[in-house]
Length: 225
Image (cartoon, rainbow, N blue to C red; front, side, top):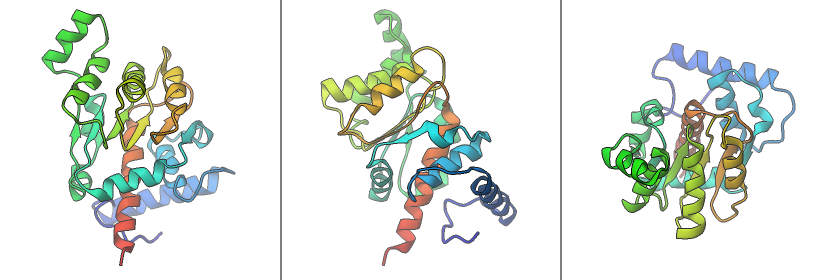
């Protein structure tokens, strides 16, 4: 499998071969799907991250999601706001740095914890509110892989306070409100989103999605005249 990408590839030739061979196996075993040429590399990388073919079908896209994500990255300097530190730790700093992007998360900030206790809400809710106060959510890529309450709060901020992210990657995992939070996100038409329907999800899937978008953005960048 050949590629023009350099920044968003594995750092060694051996690593590249393993990853490309894995993608080829997924392509051979996945069976039929209805994803577009832009969407499939994202779903394939998600399957690769968890060895779970259920994401062929569970993954759902707003019609503008892939292009919105790629354009946000090509713009340069677009913040990534995550619900948990795990997403920030999992993202490749060189890949983000190539596009001048920086990840942010506030889940463990003392003021977030204090306000969550005082208002009897979750830290995830208060972390999203803090990101909004700091002006980080508009035109940002928001990645939520752990906390359904964070995604529900993002939907509220969009609906009630006019927040306008470039893209929301909503993939919280769990049994309480996880499926419902993603269904709420998918009701929105004016903000692009990528979600995993049902209970499955997780920070690993958000990282895989963003890495796939970074790869698509670099390919677009390389192809530009």
